[in-house]
Length: 145
Image (tube, rainbow, N blue to C red):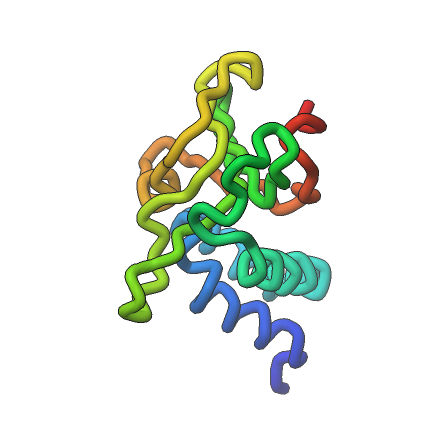
């Protein structure tokens, strides 16, 4: 029996774009979930997330927007949060890794968040288990609670 087309599309997203935004632990869990009874639910989430990332602003494209900049991605672990507004534009070589991203990062709540560049690679490769929030809905930073 072959896999449904949306499951295949979600696996391709995990092997492509999402590979550079989701850590290996979270990816392994998602691959497992795609094979379960809620596989189609997670496939739709992953395909939507890939489309959102593909259309995110690149470096410097939200310059000057301040707290009105749209937060497209949210990473979390314990009291750590990162709200990402821009992805790395890359160096033109076709390398899709995310060496840096722009947004607000905090180790203890939004009121302590600092604006600047952060490394998505470091987030997803860390052993502490930082995860990408699959249920995040894009919104202006000023509306982040």
